[in-house]
Image (cartoon, rainbow, N blue to C red; front, side, top):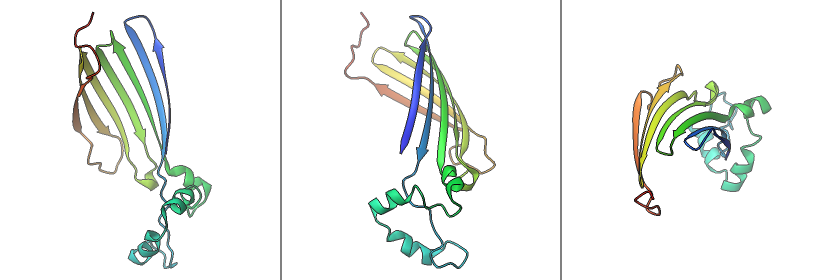
Length: 155
C-alpha cells in the first residue's frame, strides 16, 4: 500500500520545483514463531504459508510481535525533489528510508533528465547510506521514454 503527496511550485513559465513524499507498507503478515522455539524457522514457515490472501492482508496491520511500535517500523518513507527548466531539462534528488529491523535499506539518489520532442532520457545514481550492503548501491540507472501520443514537433 502506498500513499504519496506531491506539489509543484511554478516559479515562472520556465522554472518549476516539485516536492514529493511517499509512505509504503507491505500488506503481508510478519513472520511469526508459531512453535515457540525462539526463532522463525522452516517449521514456522509451513504455518506461515497457510495464511490466506485476505487474512494476511488484514493481519499485516496488527501482527507485529512487539506491538504498535514495531508495526510502525514496517512502514518505509521517501522524499524527493525535482527542478525542471523549460519542460526540457530536469535535475532530481531523493532519499529512501526503511527501519534497520525491517531491512535497513537507506539510500540517497541523484538524477537528471532531458526531454526532446517526444523522447526523454533519464539517468540516476544511487548512494547507499546504510551499514548493510545493498545490491543497488553505486549503480547508474538509465531510462529512455517515448511519448507516442505527443506531437514530434513543437509548434
